[in-house]
Image (cartoon, rainbow, N blue to C red; front, side):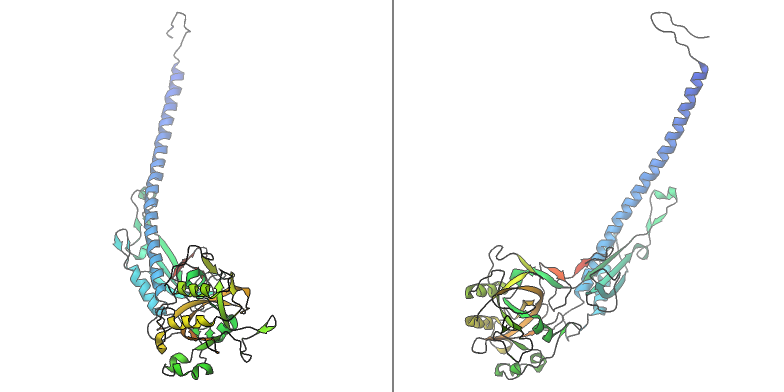
Length: 412
């Protein structure tokens, strides 16, 4: 019997069937809530485990990056001899040593897979190769797998979903390159031609060529220097030699094999060149943004039109003291390479070379005696390493600190 309420209100009737329907809905809602709660807790637990796995993966990636960079430092160790190829065994050993110095999940790593070879910076070859190609750089590749270092990650909560372990790994590749761009104060204000550079540098073997320049051989100041060094020396002449195959005819005259350059300043005076010499050897600080902050392949530099006789004494004073004349402050320096040395004109840079400047003479000869040096030259001992720069594909003896490449995207 329905309860009736009389007043100004409506009548209400409690229907047992209606009440049963409500109770059924409440039961379904409770069931859905329980299932949803289990699902949410499962995803929450999985998120916790995946979050921890992500942290561990980052630790492994950092370890792989560090090991690859450390190994790449030893590709050209600059110790005894003048090997023409990178020191692969030393690089591999040092990369593996670096792996063992890193911790993951509060435990030291024990092992990793280290591979050395050549990395193609164009992205056309997907992995490290044994053969040195035109666009290749010496590289160290490191792969670290958690499964091989204490086993995979044991999950906390994801076991309820049947996920007991998570294995993570990371890969890193580090390369050693010659610069494609460097800071202005790294550059010595002499430009040399590509023909000249190619005459003295073996790009295939990454080493200087034996020259035995007759002008060097008959120089009495160099007679006491070991033939092991003088055989690589040559003269950068301001006055073109008609018998020099690199003194190519340009704009109606023979081009010199090398010439003074005011770089980006575009001036033709001795004081600017002298300042650039001092900037490059670190005895003067260049003014902020002088001529731009950096120079790279493709950028133009100004080649001086005339002779700068007085500058030769400045260069001789800071040259290598191997002949007893210089103070070594510009003994090892980096110079720009241009296609042809065209005077009184802008010339685009095509690369950079590391020169060991032996002496400079400003008499009628007007020549700078030098040699191109390699990355692994035992005497250079890394003096032509430059910083604050960007990489380039052409190996010219000047080196940058090792850098990581984007392995997954296979780009430099």
